[in-house]
Image 1 (cartoon, one colour):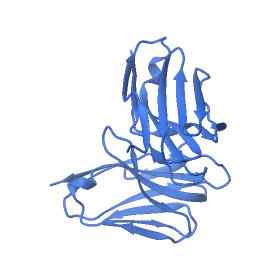
Image 2 (cartoon, one colour):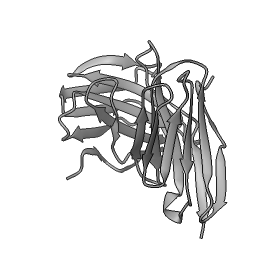
Image 3 (cartoon, one colour):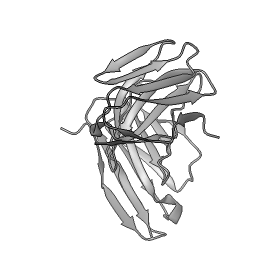
Length: 112
Length: 111
């Protein structure tokens, strides 16, 4: 069974569209994260949720809106996609905010 | 500025050789994590170090955290092609509650 899963794995879309990426974890963790990995493989945190509450919100455009319907899910919705949004987005989860994080396989987003 | 610097940025070694990757922070760290990422895949957790001077090993990979908790090294003994990938260190600078990653080290092992 996959511990942290993301859908879709690949996403190709036009500029200006709105898209969502879903993340689910079956590890029973209470903290979930979204990271963005750019073309240089630099990984940067975007959001962190603990028990469905937002605890970290880095300098991310408000076109990005995370939603956590329950502790096992953290979805990422992106409005008005721009070329610069092209990247790999990783979801991760942990048991508490300072424990080992387990990563999903990533969603490769390409904005044309 | 990048708070976690890794060196080298890339490394190509012959199978069987030993190698070391370094991760340096300008701030004291609460904890230091090492991950491996294969091309097109997610990150795989390798090891976590929390105490100054701590050292952990798993198979042929050993990681150490210095006494000041600002530098860590990852050492691979007798490297194999299966060790190839991108190695990333991740950490939370003390008091920040923000998780950051290093710049990554791309390792290639030639058979």
